[in-house]
Image 1 (cartoon, rainbow, N blue to C red):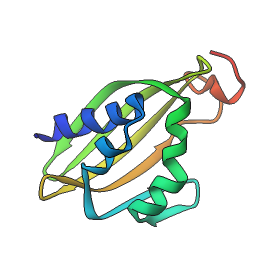
Image 2 (image 1 turned 60 degrees about the vertical axis):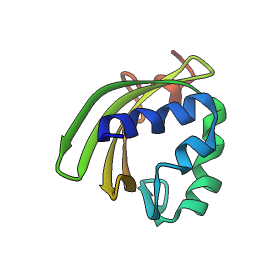
Image 3 (image 1 turned 45 degrees about the vertical axis):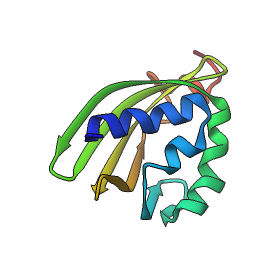
Image 4 (image 1 turned 120 degrees about the horizontal axis):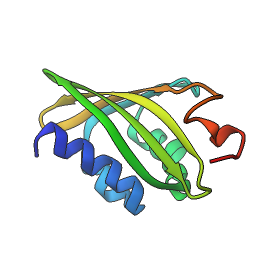
Length: 121
């Protein structure tokens, strides 16, 4: 798979609620970082902390995938099962055809399209 296919398969795994599809894409030394006190956590910790959120995800609309070398930035709008939305940017790093790390940059807490914080679509 090329980088674009890996990224699309990764988000599809969340939409389809298939952890195995996501896990198969992660490198052995995978790390995940986010503003939620996730500082280079490993795959088992990532699964425990982040995977339960898949229950609330209806779909991802990938707005941009920008690749340079072994990195890609993805900006997306996520629609939740509550009908609310939020926007994030994620930086993917790749090694050996797998995702070696993801760093998440959360959108603002208020304003378009992060109205999910207020419970409004």
